[in-house]
Length: 310
Image 1 (cartoon, one colour):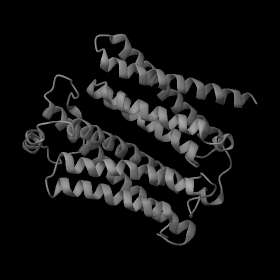
Image 2 (cartoon, helix red, strand yellow; image 1 turned 60 degrees about the horizontal axis):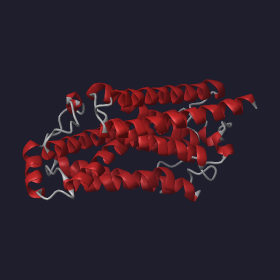
Image 3 (cartoon, one colour; image 1 turned 180 degrees about the vertical axis):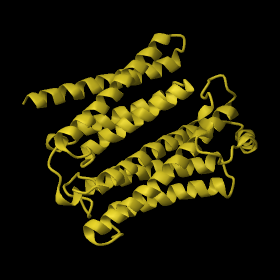
């Protein structure tokens, strides 16, 4: 009973921190002169990061397995990864835009986990036999890490399209993007850039969005590939087959193909701008179908309950 009370307190504090941080980031973009808003946003996002990190660590130590065995735990783990990515990128770039993009997404994910999933689903339980494997941590953590980085890159592409489509002089901006396009150097090459300054010309701003989308997806795609391979090895160990065309496996493959196509047109065709951004935006929705949509069906080898994941 006492543990349940602490659990409720944790969820309430987490929601308040994420909500306050989201609002503060938005208003700090609208009113850049109010530095206190930006500081408030940073403090609340840092508290939320620490809360999630220690909550997941507590579950790990208390129950003896890495806390990604069901949908609730994996949603919190995904939120924690996104918060850590946000903290690192904001520290490196001193940009408010990462928080303005990621904090609303994280608030939505955690609210969905706390308000939609049944209470029984939110409590830690003993692992079913199929999940009692060392592959649990490797496969699921890699998949969630890939989802986090791919979602970030896809969000940049969505914002790119939102800003690009209403632009009147699309031809000039497209030419600027082609001229200034940055080829695939080491993945972290662009992370030294001080980005997202409102004073930048529109073509430069869109170039930076396009480049960050490229780099984020370039990082997330290998993680997704390794995660799928690790899952295939685990499937062979658990079910005697590397690939069973399970709904989860099928949608993971479709997601992989979408982002493979994105990288293909950028690496071999030299495309940038609108075309790849549309592919990445489609990939954004495919990730959520693969991650959440399949679980709501409650079908396939990956469903050990109506909302359980592997």
